[in-house]
Amino acid sequence: MLYTSANGYIFSTSNNSRELEFRFYKEMQEKHIKQFKSDNFYSHGAIMNGYVLFLESLVKDVEKLAEYLNEN
Image (cartoon, rainbow, N blue to C red; front, side, top):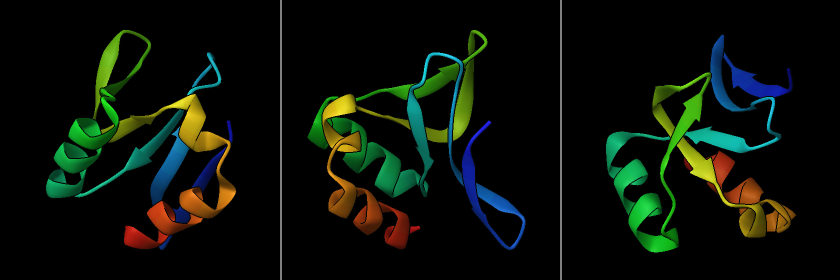
């Protein structure tokens, strides 16, 4: 399983469907979901609290991904 972490906390990961998720503060979660018409992240049928699904179109933009990682 691929993931990024800092100080023992996971900030992004992927699931078996190769979907990417980012962990955001609640305000950032709501902003991201609204702005990009995304959704909460689901893994094995359960909502992963605090994680937001990153759409494929955003995953392809490496510079934008770096910006979002820096917001955490």
